[in-house]
Length: 202
Image 1 (cartoon, rainbow, N blue to C red):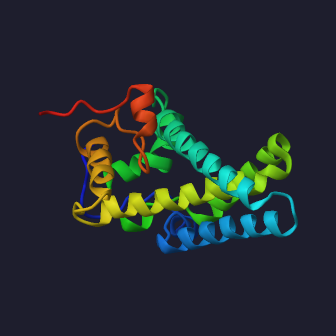
Image 2: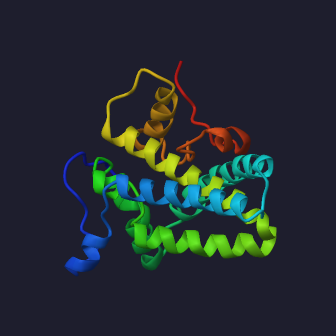
Image 3: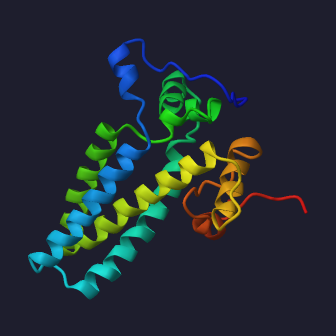
């Protein structure tokens, strides 16, 4: 699919559903930073976790997010489109982004969808980790907010002259050179570990 630097895909004919597929990047970042902070505050205030536990669990949650980000990007967003249904699903969730990578209003999942998924993950993690969930999910949601920031920066701005340059190049290779490599956006960690680092020319 050849990238188009102008324009926007039309996903739904219904104007309300179509509008719900777009969001300003600041909205989900603010939502998930706020929820992450609220979870840490609640967990510590009501003695579910200590400050030290909160710090360690936060980092663990952040690490878990980087793995979930990688797995979702590689195996769901880039699923094998061998049937018309799979092709439509893939295009709706991710293919349109590869076709129109400069569409700034589709660089994040719509908040109504992402809040639902975050709530579902909270209850799943609560069943597994009990009261430790407050620190872990806080780190996971912070990781998602950081991912949104990095993803937006890569697509909306020229290559930065700071630490983000590595991430900018990594994700740009995924979009413009090799869509079957460089699946990590906020971190290339799992590309290193799982063997999907792009082959770069010297």
